Length: 393
Image (cartoon, rainbow, N blue to C red):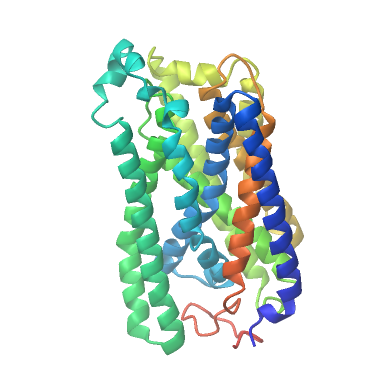
């Protein structure tokens, strides 16, 4: 008997509803492919993919980070993180339409455009469709390979309690974390930064990787608060868990802001014609309002709130802030992706919302399916410093 028994009916209901909503929303979005300009659908699909895949990619990053640094904070959300990284194959499938739609999304696929723009033509050795597809396949092979290998070792360690195996997991996770940072950096350069191939930023990929992890932390915190009302979490989760997770969310919020500001200040100071248009597009035609909103409510407000212990140690307040960060993260991703296509004015297509809901619903159903397969807490985890009631099989 697993701890999911007490939550089984609720999880089953949420899973069914999420799957139904996700399938209906994604199917409705396909209408936009045929009744409207097809490029509108593909732009929305790319945005939705980047936004929701963050929860799977970020889960892998947090999984590796926890294996390296330890801490009881990770024990509380461990099953959530493991269930999240197990959804990576879903996004390996969902990326396939993007690979077939490169001509609708990436201007560097156009031979005429490459001929007219020397800088883009000079990058043709890297920016070509076969190599783009090959790199994308490589990223997922690496991520899924790392995730499944180390997760298998973690499951074996849970079963046997072998301390030597736990040390081995930590030793492998350290270089794996470095590989994760490098591959995600390259992936975001390929998938997003190359939408505007005349422009580049050396910090762009890192900025997105940090944002993905921040989004995942926020989701896991909100989920933990929700589950903490039920066993086995009710007798396990302490105020210190919330405080530690809040500090981590603060750290990644600061790191995200630092990288974003560093990128802006360098480009602003240089004021080069090849670089400054990227920001001009995002601060004109109505996009600037969204940019300032993100600056204030993605960093300033969460930063000051997360400095306060009464916020981090209160489950309800921390959950509210985590949900807000999820919302502004989606806006931030939209602000990065959409102006690459909609440069004249601020525009939101209905498919932007429907694809996001569709992918989110399907992902959530898959996530819950993984979550129900094992006990929600691991009493034998070496990083656990508290006793766990009701976490036995």
